Image 1 (tube, rainbow, N blue to C red):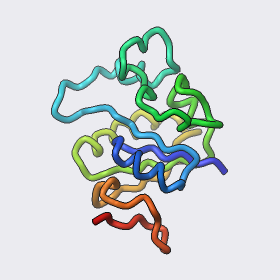
Image 2: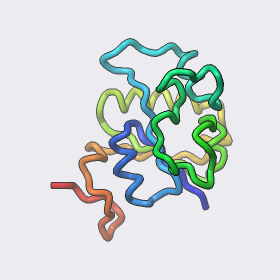
Image 3: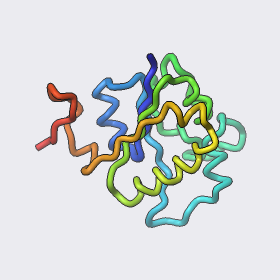
Length: 147
């Protein structure tokens, strides 16, 4: 069974990748707080399969993904919906910060028409930042606080 974890920030992505809880862990990085909002069109283009529209760093949703992060599931050129379709289950891990909450709202709105994806979704809403926890798992399966 293939499993994808999507996070609402890159720090949570780095921590969860080390846990080996999923085949692939990816962070969604749009910034909706403290800067000008990207247009809806720009956000959607960023999620498409890589093309000539993605000529600047940060234009494609996978520009910052680590080499090898998608092994067996696609290349750094794959589109968001195409990648999600490859997995049997998808978890969205959401930190409590304002930008993370807005990314969640955007993502759920974006995915609403895609029943073939939404039926595979689970939501993990955290009370604290995931990056504040060690990547190793305790015996009950939860992450342990660092420090």
